[in-house]
Image (cartoon, rainbow, N blue to C red; front, side, top):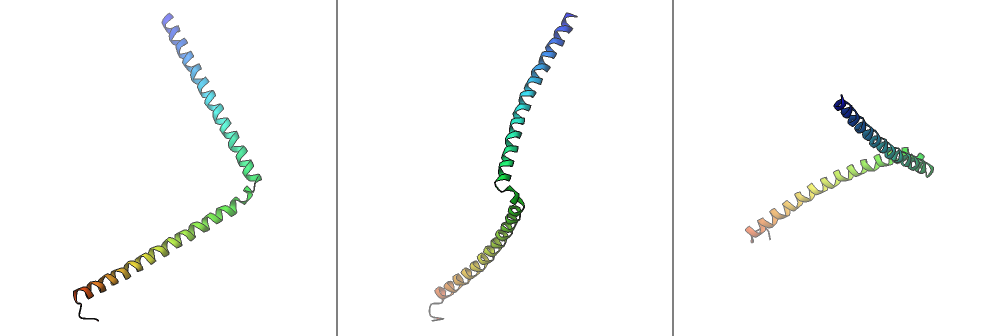
Length: 101
């Protein structure tokens, strides 16, 4: 019986320690939540109501960025094609110096 009581006491102490640790962790989460809520209120007071406009603007900028990337890729391909033609022409004139002049 005494051994069982010791096990029960040990288990109860362990549970109490876990509950205390969870309480402390919950307190830390609560503090973080309160800080986050305060920050949201601060942002809303500073014009956070424009969130829809900002979201729309971000989408526009991302679309514009994608279009610019596509244009750059296209120009890069054309430039590489021109460079190949210049290399070919240079090679032809170096191999046949008397022709084409």
